[in-house]
Length: 89
Image 1 (cartoon, helix red, strand yellow):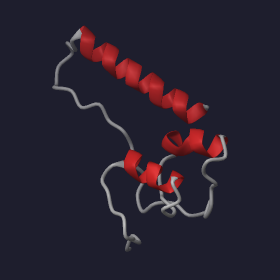
Image 2 (cartoon, one colour):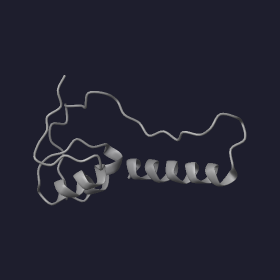
Image 3 (tube, one colour):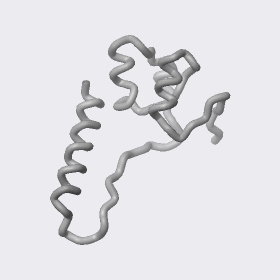
Image 4 (cartoon, one colour):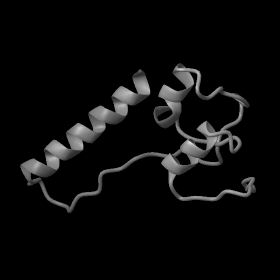
């Protein structure tokens, strides 16, 4: 399976989102990232039946063991909440 490429290639989802908002073309990006732009009409969903080649995810990778520093747990909880809030809005 091949993935289409274009004149702008980036490993930064935020950069690709900004380029799409500015009219550079279409992007494949997660709902949680583009949701606000779609809701406010800045972006329009197209090709809604099409999905990327593999399901993605965001992972917090921590060293093995049961003891997780409090500041690490707070950070993971906050980022999880922020992503979920962006997805649900």
